[in-house]
Length: 316
Ligand SMILES: CC(C)(COP(=O)([O-])OP(=O)([O-])OC[C@H]1O[C@@H](n2cnc3c(N)ncnc32)[C@H](O)[C@@H]1OP(=O)([O-])[O-])[C@@H](O)C(=O)NCCC(=O)NCCSC(=O)C[C@@](C)(O)CC(=O)[O-]
Figure 1 (cartoon, rainbow, N blue to C red):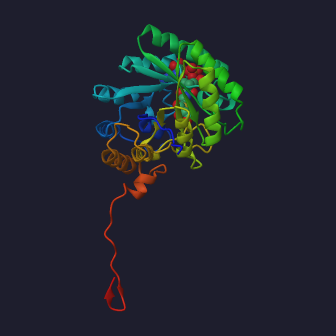
Figure 2: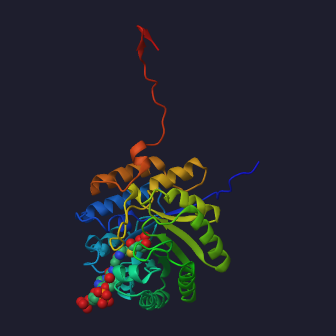
Figure 3: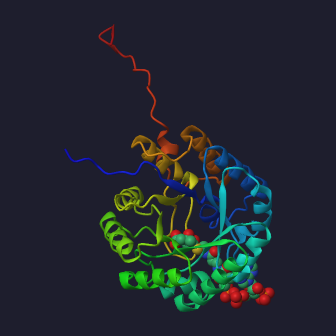
């Protein structure tokens, strides 16, 4: 009998307070952000992209990045990283004690220009400065690649372009690279084929995946990536998320939905699902909505009382 091959363990990186909050127009109080990070950490989340150090006019919701980090950086058992678009952002992050910065890079010029006001090649120059800064200051730099599976402006993104940018990251000493499906254009067959080829071509890279659930394929894409040995995924409590500079972007795959998938299939995450669900419910309450979370809707399965009815005067 053939068996589905699954890893024993995966690592989830929680991105709700960065990707999840960045498009929220209503101000989320810094106290609430800090409280939610505490709840997520208490549920067993061990890795978190906690905020971003970008221009405060580009993402007003995260203008309190320094204060948030200062108030959560000593939390035990959780590695914090921050998204940065340039060396100015990396320096801001380092000043408040961030030990891992994640670079922003898009696989298309159109998304790069909309998101960071520069072409892909100009963005690579900024990534180089971040990598140099990180090496000098003893912090880790990792990389993200937006619109890797398709771009809402340009449509198909050639795999050759994805390879070029991964090679560029690797040449700068950045080995941990996240392929991002910014607006939910990826499908499982494509994800399987991409990782198959990329893992062969870049055996020294450590790939992870960041799926938005815009068209309901995120969990299927996670399964396809798992089949290729990918064991690190970004996800967002309550399914919040979306890049404000990518038309049609919507929530990341919900952390509780992934944690449930992994728990049901015997894959260890270190997460306490009940506590996580409480944190996600609180997240939804603070923000005023969720981004599409199945588990928040349906709950963890439990045994219900069988309903009783009367048929012809008899209890059945
Ligand atoms: C990249 C820039 C800064 C370029 O913006 P720019 O206007 O081209 O920047 P600049 O380098 O010309 O500088 C202009 C001014 O901004 C300042 N500045 C410059 N950098 C910073 C900084 N880091 N922090 C604070 N201030 C900064 C800089 O110091 C200067 O100030 P002035 O001298 O005029 O007073 C801007 O476009 C920006 O901040 N963009 C970020 C957009 C963003 O956060 N998008 C969402 C995150 S990406 C995403 O969601 C995708 C992802 C990762 O989730 C994966 C996926 O799903 O695809």
